[in-house]
Image (cartoon, rainbow, N blue to C red; front, side, top):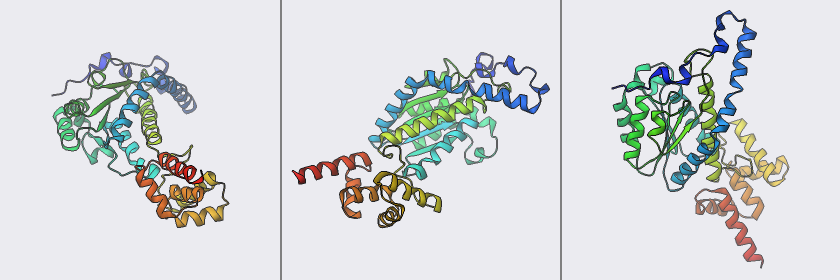
Length: 310
């Protein structure tokens, strides 16, 4: 069962008249045209900011109640979802289970094209049924907005009581009609007709960046604009933790490094230790009590300090 969106009706499948003679251009002309077309993508995303924000608010609500965020996609859309999900643990210190990406065709489809996998609606339903639970949030990603695999997953997600959002790059898609929070970033025709890994892929990456970045900020994984939850798993990130502690506390590098070491490489603990003159254990307890929300832990400790000083 395919039920694909009629290709002729999709803006992303139309011929771009600006690139009608693409094969006759030199390389500088090709990349200049690509660059000009890419400049239209942020404006297309901008038009959807209210819809994007509404979806993020709903996703954050689900995550705050113990839900998880899933991306379901096929082809480029699926790969971008997995990329975004895989970068959340090292950047924000969250469990790999909190944000997960699922692609039609499974792991093999990450590196090899499995084009017919997107046509299998039943596979999407089954994958969603096996993975999801009530209270999760699910984003279906399909540039065309009609990949049967994604539609099947979203149908099952709604039946299970999950929050559903759809990200497509066309107007009035089946995906949009099947979800609670539709996002339609209309990027128009690609310079290579139908190659939605181009502008549509760029738009998708931009929106996914917004979803997880804004969600993690709201969940207290960022302090100011510092990624205080970053995991110091290599030399570069260990150095970043020290710089984060410096920037948040005003300490010199040597003192920040000493404090980060006492905190076990956790910038949050080091910052709380310095700010409130407490042990690593007390700082860790404050974080646990706040549900690992750094801002709430900070507020709680400030409140205690004010009460003890009054």
